[in-house]
Amino acid sequence: MLSRRNFLTAAVGVAAATGLAACAKEDGTSAAAAGSGSGSKAITLGFSQVGSESGWRTANSDSVKSAAKEAGYTLKFSDAQQKQENQISAIRNYIAQKVDVIAFSPVVVTGWDAVLKEAKAAKIPVVLTDRSVETSDDSLYVTLVGSDFTDEGRRAAKILEKVLEKAGHKGAVKIAQLEGTTGAAPAIERAKGFKEVMEADHADDWKVVVSQTGDFTRAGGKQVMAAFLQSNPDINVLFAHNDDMAIGAIQSIEAAGKKPGKDILIVSIDGVKDGFVAMSEGKINAIVECNPLLGPQLMEVVKKVKDGETVERWIKTKESDFMQDQAKDALPTRKY
Image 1: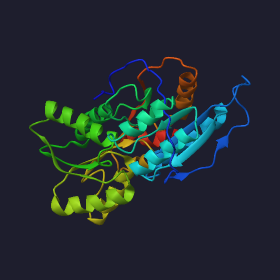
Image 2 (image 1 turned 90 degrees about the vertical axis):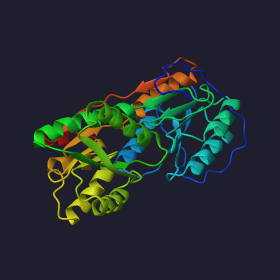
Image 3 (image 1 turned 180 degrees about the vertical axis):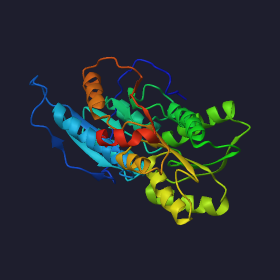
């Protein structure tokens, strides 16, 4: 199994396979009228997105589409609707169409070897965006453009320390964790990073008393948090793997007669505009940023890969952390 932390130089793979028509929703081909000025044939990029489950994901898709247009690439875009089988079908369709490069943000970590081997056999390089995969062969994809989710979990735990101090909290910290989609890299790694800090520095006073997936959606966050409050009414901290689940959870917290941000302190990850609105209203205490605006970076990498250049194995995004008292000033500058 290849770790995301293993920085290697990339070898471009290839794949020859009959493509299956994608089950996912696929946009028509969109090509920018203006290229880079080189006069060469436009790069055709096949991109399979996880879905449209959150504000973060919508911003990510918009960034990819606008950056492809700006770069003058022909973009074939599909929405997998959070189903791995749809992504696999879309990737096979891109192979059949003989695109220049395939990029995708994988729904889950495992189960990609077969289709990635088909891409390698067809000599179509694959670039991962946002999320990692586990493969038996590290040459099946060229690079990952995305965040360090384990570090985001660590950052969430460290900023919770500041939140607890600011709130003057004394005594046991009883944490409810709203996990992302089961099997997805951010869900696995954010939980791992948070747990690392908790066990190293707070083994005596912090405890995750309940943890369940909310599938990265507001509806999921609302439903699961309502169940949490029934089974564990003494929860005093919520760690949500994304802002959308936190926003959904806030509805259930308020319906239970509690004050989010006061009775239950909330730390979440992403940094979408609606999350900052909730933070400016005092309902979320801190947010760990996960930047969705990966489009420009992705297009740069796609060109390098198409040109046969060597790229780093993992190209990380730059991100920040925000406390509640920073929300009002930061809100007008949020681009997603």
